[in-house]
Image (tube, rainbow, N blue to C red; front, side):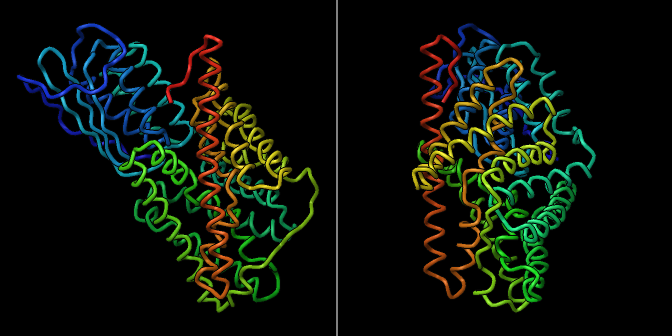
Length: 441
């Protein structure tokens, strides 16, 4: 569960105001109250924490301020803090919100964007909005912890099928997925454990798999480790960092990138430590476990993965059909790219189709916000095996192979970012041509 935001005091300063930020969309002479200033600051911070880009966050905050008649406003948002500046009738109100960087569950993201939509229409009093925001952050998961853990195991099974792992390796991966899911749930209640969770998870899972490999029970240790560790790999921050750096949001993009790289380093450190403790030669740790389960396996795995992430991140059940649609769109794009023999084209096609379907779903009154279906499916587009084994091989005798895998994974991230920009641009153009509501890019 996310920790509550600690919002600082709001000040009103009379006199000459500094240069105005981007104009808000609504005219009028409303009041920039302390509650409205605080609400926009906290909403901005939580939208960034949910995985929204800086550009879209600022556009939403300007619409909110404009809905309450404030036509002169500017915002500054980062992954760890947000500042709202509202100017009205000679008054300058400034609010800063900050909190520890903890991810929101999908049910919280859904509730957050319901609140954002209400605020954009001016349909809620700012003070009530702040109270509703506190309730969202304090809400407990809608499912029992055992269901959340089972969801992680189901997502692990789904990705093992996508990778076409042999059945014995898949069974080991699912057991480790349940263990990793348990540690994720415990980390939401113990902050110190959450800080060390990447190391602990990778070390414990690594020791189990490497010991089994020494006994000849697992012939592809790192392939067995990829599915259970997949949801711990920071693919969403990496992709968002690429997008924001391309959009010249240097500070936010660099912050997300630094966070993601540290998370990957912690995971890799745990695996390398486990490998040293077990005394497993590096050449035996990274071996191939190719298994031809049939063309049904990636499709079935994609659906199982969607159910798993919906349960683990406590998404409302009504979101599941839309999540299926976005995941299947990603699979179709990957299949098209694979037919062309290019992992980069596969990533671009998958990202384009994901963006189109996610935006189409969000445009429906019964559809979830884009981030609810979008964020969990990033993982389907990235070759987790390449990323994980690449980082570990550069510390062993296969340095050249490891660097090749890392380079491929890096450019796949770039391809995903390009695909997202193309997909969102196509949807925006189509929406404007058809007279519908175009998303704010």
